[in-house]
Amino acid sequence: MTMAEKMGRRINGLDVDALSEVLGEVERDPARAQVHFRVRSAWKGQTRSRTAVESYTIGGQEVHRHFTIDADEPFELLGRNTAPNPQELLMSALNACLTVGYVTAASLRGIVLEKLEIETSGVLDLRGFLCVVPGVPPGYERLCYVARIKGSATPAEFEDIHAAVARMSPNYVNLARPVTVDGRLVVE
Image 1 (tube, rainbow, N blue to C red):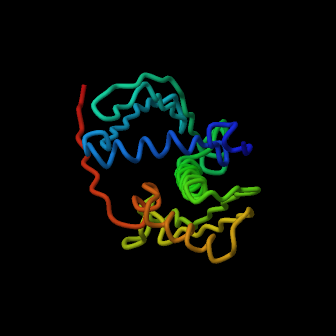
Image 2 (tube, rainbow, N blue to C red):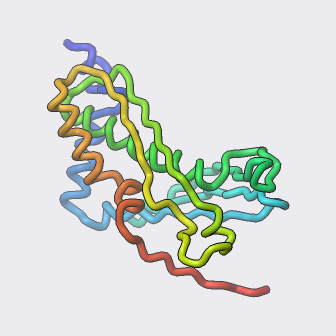
Image 3 (tube, rainbow, N blue to C red):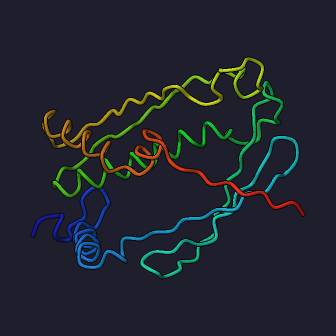
């Protein structure tokens, strides 16, 4: 019996058999593929906010959990520097989603990872956010990331995984193409 068999076919910490079961369920019943995430954020003074994660719904079933995520701006952007700012959280959300993609894709192929690091950067022009210069966009024109990976695959296999992650990572896709954002204001 191999080490993977003893661990329930765990590769890179993922239970590959359980992952295969999830894939099968999603293929058989598209309703199981529907995942509804939601968060609630509250202003905590100055530039600080706290976001609460209380539950999500998968396949029609609500799953309760509790996490908080704090955000703040650095001193130079009039914050108190108590937490990452929204841009750093955006990039960390991208990196976390990409990480899941690389690990999942490698594990499904039986590739054992030794190292995976992702570094993302982007440049914002504050003139757009502050509406100082018309036509300057308030967001990123471009985000760049570098994935450093090492493991039991050939460079060509890692290139295939890299391309697959760009196709399957929800946050990569969300940032790489326009997403409709519907905002509604409620004045109390």
